Length: 257
Picture 1 (spheres, rainbow, N blue to C red):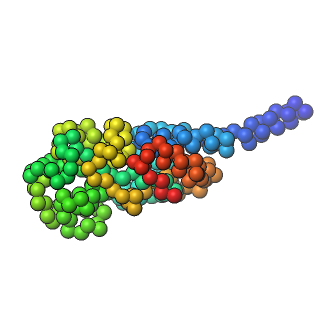
Picture 2: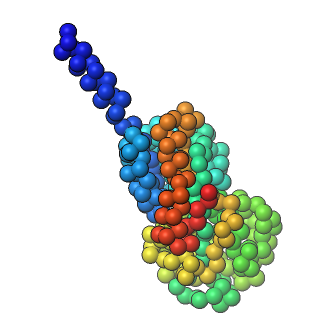
Picture 3: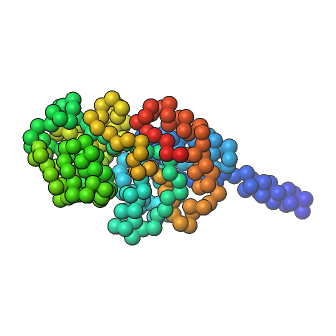
């Protein structure tokens, strides 16, 4: 009996000390890098954080919704809202972490006023980042939109196009690959960093730190308030993470807390 009680006590102790696993999808830069930075701290708090890298904007949400993953970290609220609406999901924001300013890049010109008539412009093909790109082009004076407050603007909403630029719409992740083949390309900072571009030096125009496109930690309603999720959210809002972002990305990624 004493041996049995000892075994039960040992199992109970092991269960109490066993780390809770939290599997989070993330795009490689900067999201996975930030998650890996907080991983050791979470381990001390009893959370085994597993980071699964993706290079697309679809599967991270699909797999969280299907409960194959616990959470994801790659998107901003406007994108999540549009995804939920289009796919019938109900994913929710847990914490806002940082802003990745969208930028205009080129290997052919040094300034936007050098853009030639009929130039080819590549923008992301998802609704929110496509609209975001058009808003930046409007602000930079390349085009004029019917409503420059509409974050879901499309190329059909271009009211003035003085240089008759031609738009191509591609998946955000693929845009850096065609940069040398087009006149200008609007690239999300995570993909710009992966392509070894320096947003502060290489972007011809870039969003300001007042951008509403805050990148968020996303989960499901059933697990958003779990103890492990709360610990992850707290870690992502720590002074250490703010310092890590500022020092590593030097303005290309901006803390939003």
